[in-house]
Length: 289
View (cartoon, one colour):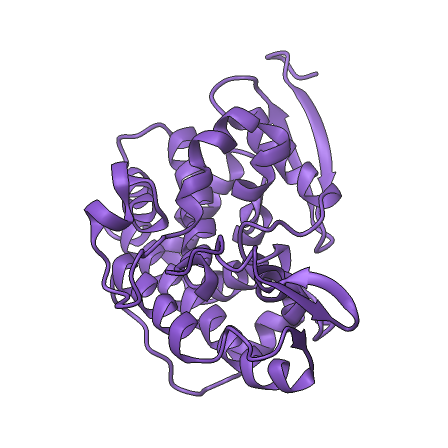
């Protein structure tokens, strides 16, 4: 206990980082710390890029921050004892186990249902009541950028932004088909039953056997030009078109190496774009003023 009655803990994270935190039970500090711990215990979520993909996006972004934005991000991360964006990258998914009520309120913010194969974002149709990843990124980015907001509120917004920018670049998070973003599309992977969403979330990236740190270094070394900039709506439209046009849905229900050879480069391109665009967003919201 410290002088204020706060309990200090050390939480080991999957990348070997120890996170210390004074557990003041106000706002969502305790929730975020508990989520960091829960991430170590849960299997890859069916909601988003798996833990590996989200940490890769966060690492790519952090490597592209301006010094001013990096310092501001570290100040907000310190509210919860975290040191890197990767430490909080999976928090929004971990809420399923650590704060079910908050998870229930935000679960529709991880994706966009386009309802049409034209992949043209129509907010009244595709984001009713602002419940989609596009509106969520816009909302939490505005909270993050407003320096008049309490640090804890901005820190939570940072965690949501880091996660949702990753989500919106996963092609099956901007689907127009009626199969829950591929969760209801059953396939076989190395002789075992699974679904297409899980292939993209975790199994395809995990087949590389790279840690988040090594994967990020690999992708940072890739100098192949990628499209950056744009708006969250445009990022979602890109994902929808990839989902529609670039072979995400296989001809066969048996996923083999030929599928991985074709689709893994697309997934890695989306990770690179997510990292670059997240950095652009954070450089704007945290590095100005």
